[in-house]
Length: 115
Length: 112
Image (tube, rainbow over all chains, first blue to last red; front, side, top):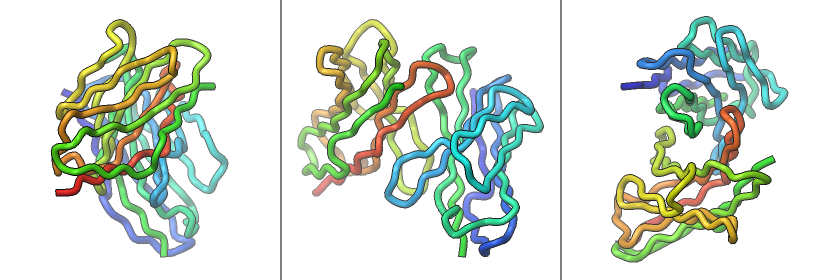
């Protein structure tokens, strides 16, 4: 079966500090991977998605970046955090090999608080 | 582009009462539709999905949803609410693999 991991689970960082959030998927190959942000009391905002190693598409301009160094690893980074970067970050995957109906499966999330 | 609108950001029901969460979609072609549930400080869990075929879709935890093309709706229902159903619910629509659009979410409260 497939599983998705995210770490850390919670993070408190000062403004201006760097960020690295990691997401890994097990049990599937060549998944599509996604990073979402969920601000307090709001819906999901797609930040990045990737269809393969080194292939990253950005949905919104911001001080965040994403990388996919391995097939099942997706990393969200920032060189200098802003207060507005606080939120709940969710990683998700999908795979046409598993299901042709495009549903996405989500990780447990990382709660980021920028102080 | 496709989109979904969830009517009502908060819904409150009594335990044992009918749960009805509303979702309307906009799409130029037949969409794939989903309902997800999110418990506090957790990721989203897929409740059910509509792809093609039968318009009444049954999901986990006793939930079901009906795809109504004429009304462009995909409302989520459960005959009898349980305290454990209290959570945030998201409706979503996609036409391709990389563009899933989520609604703003509906927070369900269940009163004892």
